[in-house]
Length: 158
Image 1 (cartoon, one colour):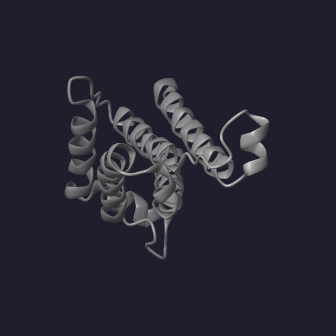
Image 2 (cartoon, one colour):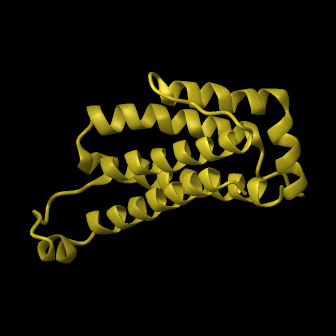
């Protein structure tokens, strides 16, 4: 596996670990007090943001494995549309089907997770109080875990 692909997968994993840590911190008054934070504060919007970045960096790793680089401006949009080409062409589905006999790793579902998390990041991070985001934050972590594990398996089996 290319070193730049590995770097993006590591970044993706780091974002997921940070999202999980922030989720745990948001639910622990003791830890918040230990860190000097207000015990009533929550950081669920940051969980959503870091979960999204897990998916984003994972998609970048996949694209880099195919020699496709996306850059600013509009890097997030470009990454999404380049990733989508692999889903639309069926290439990603075929690889995921080889890995999963039960088809749980369907690529169209991964693409939907990517788009949903991108939209959720815009809504919950910028337009909603963090305290109201606990359930969407938990869903974001689950989506990031699913996306990362599926793409990692594809890349590791090449």
